[in-house]
Length: 263
Image (cartoon, rainbow, N blue to C red; front, side):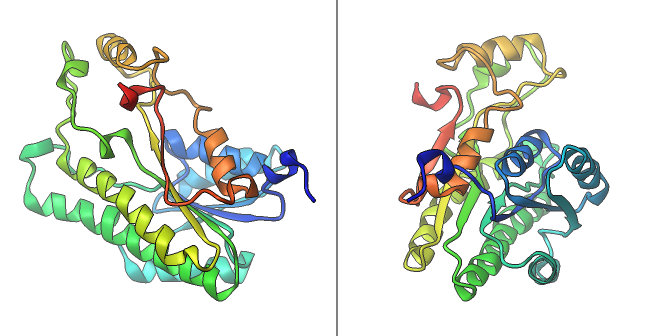
């Protein structure tokens, strides 16, 4: 019988995260690697991923980077085959990659909305099926973690943008992040009989130096904890959901937002 702390370990597991060089991706990669997983990052920006991998391998962690395009089914299937050949089956899949093409917001072209769905909805489905079916074939009781957003749970609050040039009028993001939550439940049901779990995390806003003071203040006032997220706030939940400690949790959507959506 393992101890509770041992059940939080990812030692001996292989984890794949799409994306990995962005605001939330970096801390997700750090968390997986620090918890002992052999960690593979994959996205279109291989150079950025390799920089992250170099930093972490320099600290003694097992981190690799691969190129793939979530908007291309053949690229997704090639990634699956490459990962299996080089690293073996994946125990943890983190769907973190996201495309944000609607720079004009609500008034952007329909083709831009469709491009977003091609990557963020269709691509999410294809990669989840590819690696989920592989877990079934290899008899892996794996964990699939979808990185959603509070914007998949609530509508835009214009008050947090007052006095800034920022806005929250990006319909594609709300659409596919909302869909991700129920897709998570579908996947949890579909693979549950095989011991494969699927959960969704809903992060809140991540504080950056580029954010206007007014936005930081207004957003922070909207949360119970009085602040935006930092560069470690997702690490604990990622390790928990990837590890055996959460073996009876599936189909859940867990906000990690300082209480933003609890108001």
